[in-house]
Image (cartoon, rainbow, N blue to C red; front, side, top):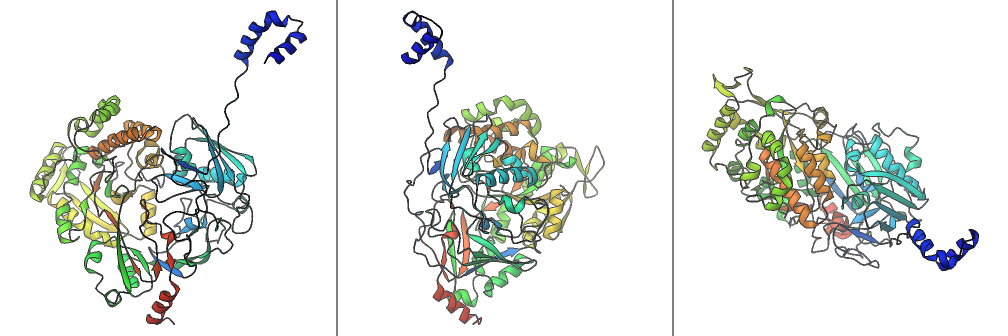
Length: 625
């Protein structure tokens, strides 16, 4: 410092000793201290430190010595598919396409939200979370042998957000820019939103090959066997019947710690069946060998067939540690007849879960009440002071939009009559308050003289048994009801065009909800084609709650904001919730091996393997050899 002052004094013919104090002050004010360099890490975690050190050999739940080979055949339900590009709106994509793509980092199923290097061997996160940088592995390759570079990362981001499904534009909305610093280093710059999750979200973006897609029309469905960089490549495409993936023996990342003991099965097949009943018969015949069983009656009494009795078919129930899936009938709020919350609440009362559970589900389910059920994010009882503070700025808006101030003054779960008759009596009272009366057996809007009609749109006939009892109860109130079952392509087209009264949708939640909530609930997604805001919800208060949820800077804050959001959604009666089992139920032909205990936050089927001897024996007994 003094040496620089002497040089400056000499250059300007000043007395260094006399001017030193003034010069030092001026210099300290004009020259900023360089920022501390950001350390390069092998992993990232949302709130805590990653559980695994930088020299870990493999994930704890895998068998590093698992044999390689064999086939797993899954069931895909639907008419067919017409595209191997699942990133766009157009077309019906084939099942399982995510297996051909690698991401920058990958999650450990034993941690709620920690990611470890895959395409990226190192990561630097700005302490203020304004940017993140990745060092790509020089050895990373696409399946056609071309290297994976930072330019592919930039290209993938631009392609997905500009030409892909609008979900990507929403999901990555707070990424201001992606810059290739050189061939193997890339930086994501973030907006001033202070989202803790955003840096981890971008680590899971699929990376597409620029050299392949740049000269092609990305927005058009295709059945091409295009290359990815992942452990499996597309081997066979047969629309209407199947798609087959084969393990890439030259996969560049097979020796990485995150991949050791995983992707052991040589061929992954998805066979297509028109409906679930036909798919079930195919499984019993051994044409498919793995299924996730979501039907309670099948799980309870369906496995009394010869192969199951002989022990050739096994059942496995795995407790869920993540929030329960919200499956629900969804109102289309874009239609005038569903804008009054009293109408939605009244129609919700016609869903008689106790009867369904006793007569159809063999008592296997419990009613889903919360959008974050089975987690600390679920709203319960009276709103806490923290929730009230979060909701206070929106009190007038929410009271008007929800038709009451119950979100602030009433406990959850919502108290409803348990027996059907008083439920329907309460429903009719609400409908009368909303301006409806029964005339000649038909519920009519007194202001417009229009009957209240409701059609449920389905593509899976198996769900008819869930919908029909509710429709019968609605009909008892005078509602004119109908049920329409269409093929999957027509269903998707009508869903994209918002051409429905009510349909069944799903709202999956992780233990760390974040940017995906924009696609579920916000005004920006309400009229976006193929968004998951099926209901068309557009409330500024909900938009604000979602933004605050994304910006939550601690686990406590995230829990309180999620509880506030949950409370608003439940008192809005935007959906009629279904039920959940609290476990994942799977059945499989006894040729697979796996290591227990299973990871805490999801069934990692990629860690399973095929026992070659048992597979050969099954083939012999089924008469295939």
